[in-house]
Amino acid sequence: MDSLVTAAARALASGNALDALNYIALRDDPPALALRGIAMAQLGDLSRAKTLLRRAARAFGPQEAVARARCAVAEAEIALVSRDLNWPVRALGAAHDALARHGDLANAAHARYLAIRRLLLIGHLDQAERQIEDFDPTPLPTASRAAYELVVGGIAIRRLRTSNARAALAQAERAARQARIASLAAEVESAARILDTPAARLIAHGKVRLLRLDDVEALLGSKALVVDACRRVVCYSGKVISLETRPVLFALARTLAEAWPGDAPRAALLARAFRAKHADDSHRARLRVEIGRLRKVLSAAAGINATKEGFALVPRRARDVAVLAPPTDEAHATVLALLADGEAWSSSALALALGASQRTVQRALDDLTADGKVQAIGRGRARRWMTPPVPGFPTTLLLPAGLPVG
Image (cartoon, rainbow, N blue to C red):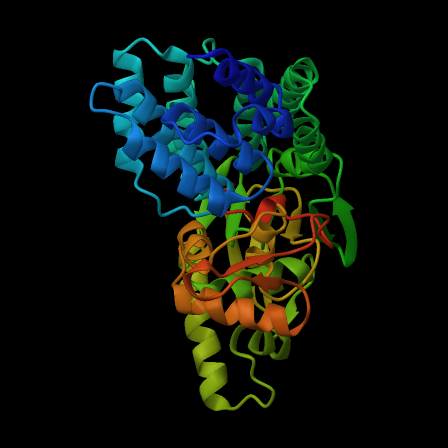
C-alpha cells in the first residue's frame, strides 16, 4: 500500500473524509476506489459510495479475498445507514468468515457488529441479544467500540433495563470522546437523551402523568396490574399476557383499567371496542361474548364483574391498576417511532421492521405526508421517507419488540 493510500486511510479512520479525498480523489486503482467510497459515505453521498465500493470489489483480483470482503462489509454498513434492510445477510456472513480466516479480526468483528445492529433495527431482540453475549468487542477500533456500546444500550433500552443502558451509553460516550469524531459523539448524545425524556403516559385513578423510562421500568416491576397500550399487553407480577393480535379484547381491557376502581359503562366499552355510536341489541350481545373471552384470557390476573352500569375489573393480587399509554395519541405512531431516528427509511424497510405489509405502511406514509409530518425524497425504488431529527414526542416504547412477551 503506497503512502497516499495509507494517509487517506488514516484520515478516514479519524473521520476526516475531505482530507482523505485530497489524497486519492483522482485515482481509480482498487484501493483508492474503496477509500473514495468510504469517504463519500462519510460525507453522506451513499449512492455514490455504494457505486465506488462495487467498482473496487470487482477490480480486486481473485487473490485479494480480504480486500473484497472489506468492500462487502463497507457496502453492508452503507445499506444499514440508508435503512436498506433487505440487503443480503449471507454476503455479510461470508465476508465475516473470510476476514476471520485471514486474521483481519478488527473488520471481522465489525461485520459481526453490523449483523447484530440490523437485528436490533428490525426488532429481533432475542437474536441480537444472543449474538451480543457471544461477541468479543476487543478487536474493534475506538470508533466502532462506541457504536458497539450504542447497540448494547439500544437493546437495554428496549428491554427497559435503564441502569444497563446508562452504563453502556457512558462507555459509548468515553469511546466517542477518544475517537474525536463529532458525528459519533452527537449520535451518542442523542441516544443518551432518550433516558431523560418522557417515554409514556401513566393513566390511573382518573389522572394522567408522564413517565421516563426508569419510571416505566419501576411500574412494570411493581405489584400493579398494568395494561400496556404501547405494546398491547397486560403485565402483572412479572408475567405478560399479549393481546397484540386481539384488538377488541385489548380495547376492552384498557377501558376497564382506565375506569378502575370504578366500573366502565357499557356505552364506553361499546364505543372503544366496536366504535358503536348507536348501540343496538346485536352490539350488546357481542359485548357480552367479548367480555367472556376477556375473562378467560385474564383469568390468572383479574376477574371481570358485571355491574348495573357495565363491567368492573377485579385484580387477583395486584394492589393497583394502571394504563401505560404512548406519550401521544398520534395516528401511525409506530411508523413515526422508527422515522424519529432522523434517517431516511424505505417503505420496505419500515414494513420489515414493523412486521406489517408494505401496503399498510404505504398508507400510513401517505397520511403522514399529507399532514406534513414526514417528507419523501427520491423517486421509484430509491424513494425514502424521513422526519426532522428532533421528533415531536419520544418513541422508545413504540419501537418493535421492546418487551419480552410470554
